[in-house]
Length: 269
Image 1 (cartoon, one colour):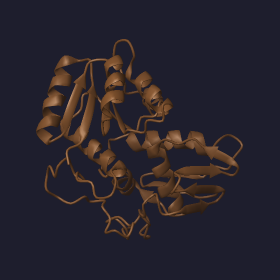
Image 2 (cartoon, one colour; image 1 turned 135 degrees about the vertical axis):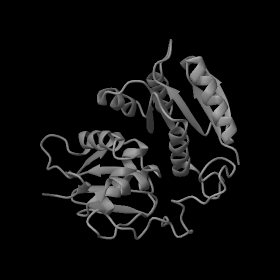
Image 3 (cartoon, rainbow, N blue to C red; image 1 turned 135 degrees about the horizontal axis):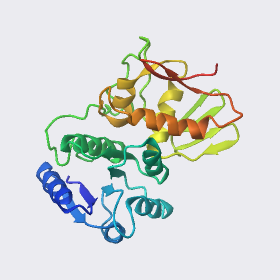
């Protein structure tokens, strides 16, 4: 089954090149040049995923994202941005984006992030685990066997201990004063409900399911994004930092800890 992609990018050469590359990859692409067209198209066509440039005339990508999320539209959004500062990336996540790619980018990175977003949101039985309409003919590295446990289950964390990779819909998880309901995709710290994006929820659940176990960077990348972006990527650090701002608020005991050179762990110290 072919996935429908809405591409909003005001730079004509980038828009044309991406539209061509995505079409050749097997996606059905609708390309627009500004935020107003992006909103109109999203309302009319209901795409499977949206590629949204941050800097656009009129309504920019952040505003488009905010409007869609305010309308309870949960279509996965991949932001395209030339802004490299952490604060700018956080603004995109705060607007409700699921992931971002920094310009200039390799088209293969865009493909990888799209596949990861679509794997996490596709209903059971839908084609496209590793690309639209079986683009590369391979099986999804994170797909389960029908038991609710992905292929990564039973791998090792950075300290050699086994970790659980069950899907987010496998019930309630409790760790310290955190409570996470995978069925409703809601989370609380004590009596306070946490307002989390899809990626933040999945990252927190992964850490909570493996409380006390250090998960290395590559493990987290593989489990959350389905792709290891390499040692130079700051993607994970940005998400962890933003998640800490919501979970480890001033006055509470920090739960999310960095193990330098290895990864992250959720524990009470």
